[in-house]
Amino acid sequence: SQAIALDREAAVPYLNRGTAYYELGRHEDAARDFTSVISRQPDHALAYARRGLAQYALGQPDYASQDLDQALALDSLDAQIWFFQGLLQARGQAWRPAEASLSRAIRLDTSMADLFATRAYVRWQLGDTLGAQADEERAQP
Image (tube, rainbow, N blue to C red; front, side, top):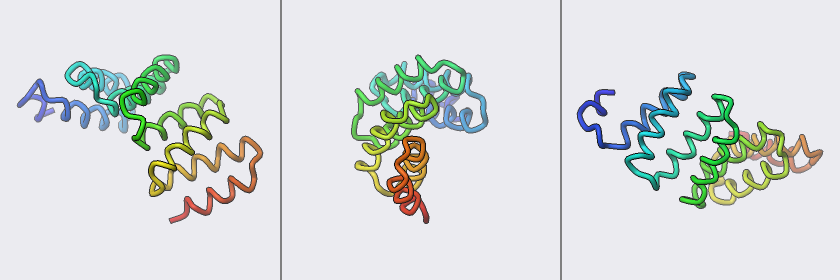
């Protein structure tokens, strides 16, 4: 909030505060700050992705999906955005699309253990025991 008071046109302080709000469960405040980032930098893919997560937490899955689609249109090489997309798809029990999104994220960044753990869960839901077990092994530190 202090950084925002110093420079109201800067986007990064809004992104950081929105992330903090999200982690505190203040999803409306988070969505508002991510919207502030987008109004200042309309091509900020991560702001769209994080706003999508906030929208989902607020019970607005359609808006969440639109934001994630926009984030991927802006930056299709960001593993974190694909991870967010996969999370939302899994929460909606869209198992095949979730597996595809998480697999794409893993191709982009194999260092995120959460990707493997989440894809393992999705693969269990799909009945892919061997794939799920392999992902669980890769998720271990």
